[in-house]
Amino acid sequence: MRGGGGNFGIVTSLEYRLHELGPVMAGAVLYPAAKAREVVRFYREFTSACPDEITLHAGRMTTPDGVPVMAVAGLYCGLPAQGEKEFKPLRTFGPPIADMFGVIRYIQMQSMFDDAFPPGRDNYWKANFIRGLSDEAIETFAEYAQTTPSVYTTGPWLDHFHGAAARVKASDTAFAHRQYPYNFSIFSSWVDPAEAERNLKWTRECWDAMRPFMAEGAYVNYLEDEADPLARAAYGANHARLAALKNKYDPTNFFRMNHNIKPAPTV
Image (tube, rainbow, N blue to C red; front, top):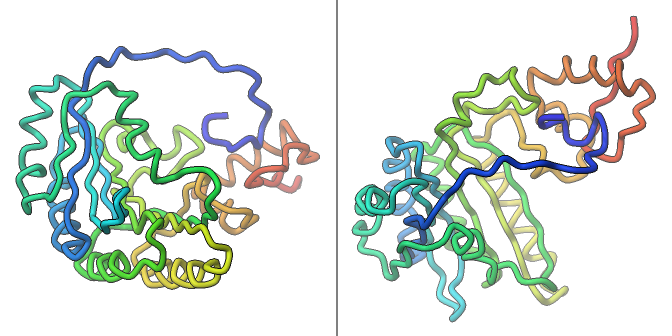
């Protein structure tokens, strides 16, 4: 069940083992969208050596008063005083046009960008891992960060993956893609249905432009209903083992309303 995407049963209850986490050093800094290239280059440098305790994201968004910006948002999962030291280079680079970092409750960080995704808007999202942030990838990212057709679009966006999760063996869970340092996302959003085609076109063009930098795998939570080829890509080298398990426990493929792992054919 660990990452199998509902292919092997239905979860009816969960029991969590929580880890205490008091106030944290967290927030975001904002830069002009026109500085996307410089911001992502700094983000690449900063994330290349940040400690396990830091989670950091970067991307293009629009402030509530309509200003396009590049945001770098993060959290230090440890003592706030140490987090303040770790984030100092980020908070002094640029300098930023706004600094929203501070000592806050973890749940405040989780809801910081809720206003950017209100109910009622049309959305079209795409995402996949990228192999790294080469200069060419950054140039492409920066180009599309400055040409979004909707003021509501949040993206392109980058998530950094490292630390303990990256040290789990690929074969230990169904999720196999732990070697890639970044995930690339596009969160397109608009209000007027007449704007749909323009936003869809821009999103697909951005996606195609970034495709040369993408990894072969995929993250199953980001997939649409794209059926077998990308389901296989989502599980990578683990797919054959999962298909064998499916054949053992669900040979009729009863659990199929998902990114489906088909039972391996019997010999």
